[in-house]
Image 1 (tube, rainbow, N blue to C red):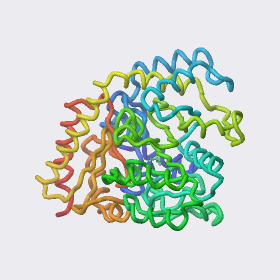
Image 2 (cartoon, helix red, strand yellow):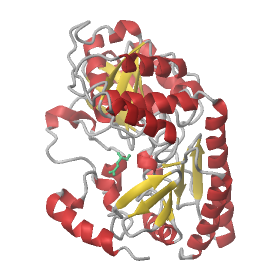
Image 3 (cartoon, helix red, strand yellow):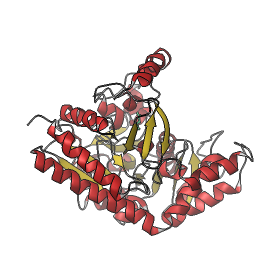
Image 4 (cartoon, rainbow, N blue to C red):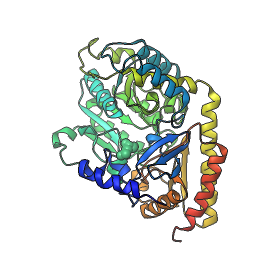
Length: 429
Ligand code: HOZ
């Protein structure tokens, strides 16, 4: 595969950007090789600057549930741009997108748009602290909630990918009130609550972990979090930046029928443009300025282009057939990958929830970060590079999720399974 133009661009980028990239995982450090520079995306495909074509299972890390350059999304952005790109004043588009989100997720009685998932989680926790008058927060090992100081403790995603336990530059004081427990370990949460219950403002959780690879909650885990937080007067925050519209059209809260106090969103609701949102119970949200005293603001919040792209995306998802078909194709892919691994004699576990999946190189059950990090990342790297040569673009890290779109047809998925059959042959037995 000729990647000479990507290589030239990567050399130039390294002079400008740390590691040559503007976000760490895409630098391919965990899988070897050099990042591809992308020229364009269309449907299920990415095209790099050297003219190579790949089936894309990253989809901008999840947002592109309708695939690249979906005509409805492109038209919405184009038409909106002709009327101006930002107003710094309210527009009707915000109400339209807000109502659409509410139709899928009625737990968001009120919400506010921000510009990234990091902003959404950071603010949701500030709000929880303001509402409860308490300081401590609980997060889970291997869950990633963006890069705010207080959350960069035993985090997943790029932090896990690069093997960084935490980050220099985060003051000890910033994480002093962050309590960390293993995902799916309700006994550990119970013990934390019995010692600190009256000081805990909130538990924040990815209800289906996606940033240590996809790890589903064990039966009863989310229910126990709901019960313990209610009993102790703490808030339950579902970070659905990744899982929203991905594990179910109504997010994990609909899939598992749990009502969190606050929810954070991002990715899909922006249709591929930068976005975040937080929302939940009205009496809590009314604490947000200017309605209440908890301050949060943003020059580009509710940006019309983002709102338009989000509206176009969610309008399409109102047709249940579209989402159900993406989920069906994800199930077919998971089954095909499992069968291909068995044929090749490679030990692999494929986790799938809704339209998200991860292929872990292990035969041991994965239920939390301690077990996820034992997956054989070197084999994942081999598999990633082999799949790339077969024309398949997977997440460049064992500890990320893969995603499908409405353009991932039977034909595309079959081609991927055939590619996996070949790629698994390259994994040492
Ligand atoms: N937070 C992104 C995935 N979970 C990271 C993307 C990147 O570093 O490129």
